[in-house]
Length: 96
Image (cartoon, rainbow, N blue to C red; front, side):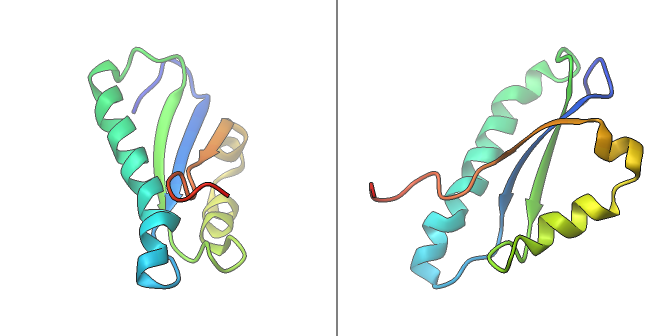
């Protein structure tokens, strides 16, 4: 979603998981929260100071490979414009 500046907030979740039942918590729940938040914020697009970028990664269960490849592939100026990255991982499930 556009912002008034080039500063960017990334909200991410990952699409991969381990066992089917475990993947519902880690991390289908994070994907659902990220999508719901984006849907709620969409009517305000363009009013935010910062760009809001929604990102979904694969291969995160294996040493955060997906997000690392994404980050490393960004042009330096775009990478440096990221003010905050909020990763939604295992946002639901039993209390520890």
